[in-house]
Image (tube, rainbow, N blue to C red; front, side, top):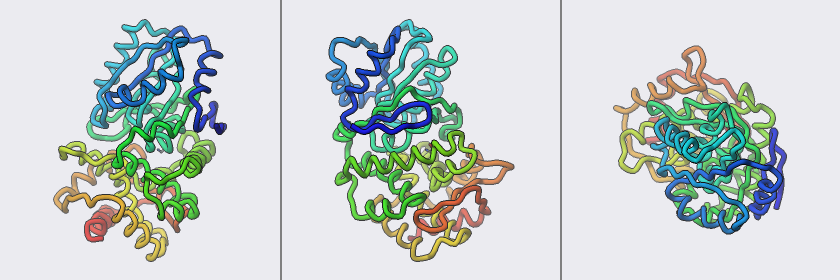
Length: 352
Ligand code: GLY
């Protein structure tokens, strides 16, 4: 097991569920609740139960799986269940799941009775390398991702790659995109290693490297006033596509699939605006086009995508805020692009 110091808590990594037992023994919580979704209830809760044994009693709150359910209605459902289970201020919420469970569960916990303790047990690659670290909580509203939320730190994070065995390939590819992002914005060496791998070949070591990058960035800037914005690379256009797809497609894009398209578009903007060398743009777009299925949309959707981007919480003074690469491994913040440049970047994706 490895342990990484984060802001006010520790991230325990690999073979760490016994550490949760230790955490529960040390903290006399009046009640323990476990938030799961329909998938983690089936595949991950038994693993947790096995580790906790009979000594620790808990009640389970279940929500439907899927980003379309990360909203205030489900959040109200969680609060009502907390009340029904008699949760008081000394209750602990364990979020056992992917980004939807960790984001929404931590939002529900951070606002219930002005805030109760919570811990994260991320079970998807995406939530292990990104969502569970850094204290961002949130829900979506009116198709805008994470527009309602708080910065609230967990009491601990337990990241165990054992849970990744429960994921299908599409989910693994989705999480892999956030790892690629860490390479693109921060570490050319990590990008080079990932380029030659398939998501099901990744080792614990490389997952840990990715978590270390995420943790280093959030420790430097917990409230996203500066450097943390580099983590948003690909997410301005990526989030717009994800919201658009959630609204319009029967089988919507997963987060990682949407941001992979965002990486290509924003790499194009980086080339146009921020001196990203053309050979690096091609390196990024050819890799991602090979790795992720082509998403089919056309110019008719561009105005809808733009209007979603204009609602992005990262904007200021009505300008759409981007974080753009200057080379693979380096990212710069607070860059602004015109509507025409954004349309050009979407066309670049479609024709690449
Ligand atoms: N997911 C980006 C961040 O935590 O800042």
